[in-house]
Length: 210
Image 1 (cartoon, rainbow, N blue to C red):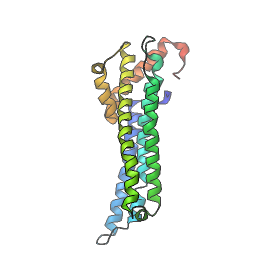
Image 2 (cartoon, rainbow, N blue to C red):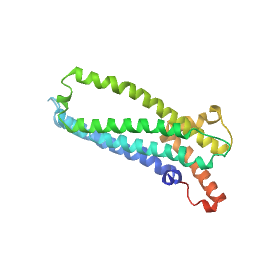
Image 3 (tube, rainbow, N blue to C red):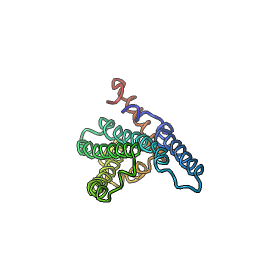
Image 4 (cartoon, rainbow, N blue to C red):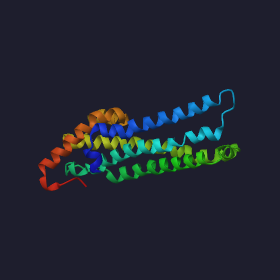
């Protein structure tokens, strides 16, 4: 958690947006190069899909940094919350791991789907419809969990900053900055760095946050 809490805003931006964007550009160049080499002919589906194998890596890198940062703020900064304020950390942890498991499973499925004979996987509408009935509600619930995590992260950050109970009006700005992370990190992370440094300066024996 200390890595995320004490990292600079540009470092988090590079890991969560810069490198994934570079990999996405490489992936798109590979796809367009293949299509240009086979102009006038039907695209070779397995060859095109092989170029998309970077997609799970891109998503795991982006979500790994984003979720790692959220966990670090929501859990790692709890010692900085005033003792008289009780926050629902256990609820956050439950809601946090639901989308983590969901996203990981989806990325694994996509990776193996792209590694196999994809047309054989979609030769039956029934075989697509059944997983859809399971994935769709799970996807919606995972989205709800992600928004709750954003809410809890923003509330924790503002509670530590103001050292009092806060309402949504107090941390609405932090909520939307956390939501649009590649932009918000440039504003939020310097404030987090400052709070962490202040906490350590006031408690020289604290060492580092857990």
